[in-house]
Image (tube, rainbow, N blue to C red; front, side, top):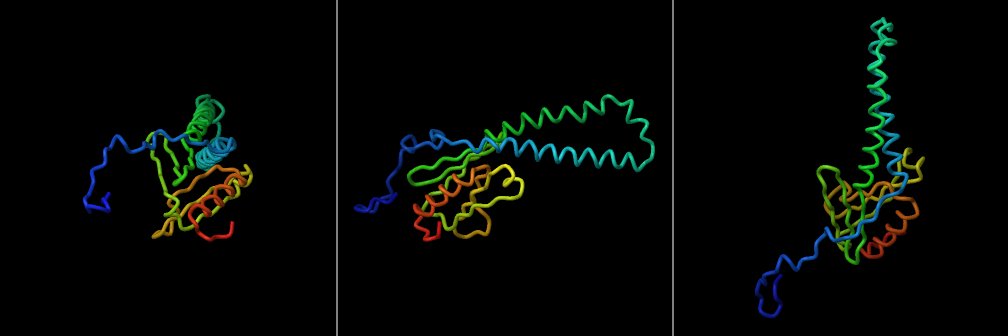
Length: 178
């Protein structure tokens, strides 16, 4: 930081900087883990169907009835998907503060994205068919200089996403219609 009186570049003590770790993050919709679980099951069923379809086209299905391990191989991942969906949903959260918004994500490689309100150019609320079924939307936040969203917060209820969008527009003085 430049001291406006003397023009000097003043040293900042690193311990005096507020930590992003101390922020209280808000969780996503309670339907978000359910949606992740459903998508995992659909992908698993598609993969399993393709494998069985290839075997079916080869002709002989008598091997299928005596293969108990195949049934375990089919059912066991469902428990893993259930645990993973919940863990992944809990790893994603957001926080609104006076001057910025934060989004935290990641089970193994964790990251926190922080955007000051004065850098926000555009805010969108978006939902696909699966999100609409679970009554959820994604909030996409854009800054200048890119065509992709700089922050995307999935798994919000439509009412909450609209409320956050209106708040971001107000704080960023974007002049968009809420």
